[in-house]
Amino acid sequence: GFLIPVVVGYLIWQKRKELEKTEAKGSWSGLFLVLVALFSYYFGEVCSMEFATRISLVLWIYGSVVFLFGYAVCRVLLFPLVFLLFMIPLPYLVYDSIAFPLKIVASRTATTMLGLTGIPVYLEGNIISLPTMVLEVADACSGIRSLFSLFALASIVAYLGNKNNLIRGIIIMSAVPVAVLTNTFRIFGTGVLVDLGYKQIAEGFFHSFSGWFVSIFGFCLILGASRIGVFLETRKDNINR
Image (cartoon, rainbow, N blue to C red; front, side, top):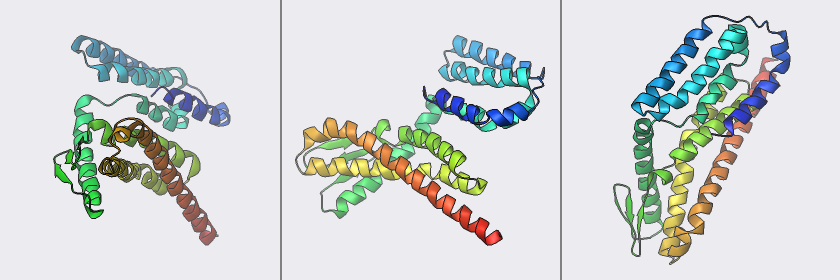
């Protein structure tokens, strides 16, 4: 979340030449968004709703840009402004509703893979029972954290590396299966280590390291999807010529 403003700053800097050609004509309608942002912050403080206080910052930025520079500048900066939303954590209700099915899918898939390798395993909900240890697939292992990180990374990769909007959308949505796949292999790897008798490794260093590893692996898959998209775009352009 703290890296998002830095990325947005870079994206705006990339638009500097286009911004120089765009007429900055402020609009009073931007004050409406500023007032909505202030109300959202006040409402969040009074009702102890962190999401409302957090989203108020983004709304305030939107309103300020419209008020100071107008809608023409907003259109140029549409993607960087929308990308700011990635720095706001989801409300817990939405977070939980996404995390639960993700960890169930990851648990079932990993259990099936463990069974295919001949490891005795029993699944009950998100609890994986092995002969020597019981593993609980918690929300952190469901893939939801890497999912939103991959969404952000996929958006940047698609925006900077691809031109076709359909291909961009496919790359961004590919973050969902990639997140599930990588975290399934993480759970599977933990189960294999436990079955081999390396319980301490599975609980300690490996658990932390595997989180970083699957994130990097997932990002590599996103980059691969983007490169395939570039190949398809180039091929389409050559055919049209």
